[in-house]
Length: 240
Ligand code: PGA
Image (cartoon, rainbow, N blue to C red; front, side):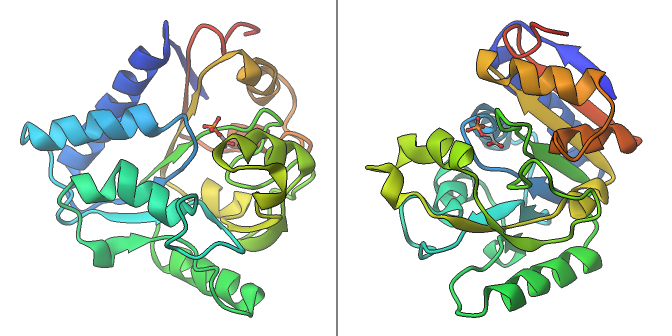
């Protein structure tokens, strides 16, 4: 794994954007794996600027998001579908037919997870961006998830629901389940960039980079992948 240490969130977002711009220029019809959460917002803002300057186009880009909450309609303000539209898709020239997030709006969630997995098997991701949970999760692959796990319906841990409650009125409103790409799907990407900012991520980053890979720290599976870049700011990289 290649680790890039930068000063702060601003620089992290710029360095991540440079990697994305380079790959999009190399292959304007590439397939991106995208993430939600606070961390990639700066990357998306920088990509929007590059698009506005005419440096890149998303016209032929395909995207697959890591995960989506169950129990929320796509139109819910906190759905990841809404997040992606507000933070990226509505501000670039992407064809919305090329945008994919797990559907979670049916009664048979297992079937919906299987359908998303099939789509991923048919579309290899060229460049995947990841955040990391304070418990080491990637996507919603919580500690204990097998590295062979494919897309599935996951029950969210209390820790993850606590971490995400800032976006809701109360913890009771945070969904209890999500559909997420599994670790196996994530490892199938050609190139992976993980971003981590802030001291809450320092311990998870240390375990991801320095300790033996273990399902207890889902992000440590990335050690098994040949092309991973981890970009950390000073606080997230403080223990390295
Ligand atoms: P965050 O979430 O970017 O909001 O910190 C990351 C994650 O939980 O994967």
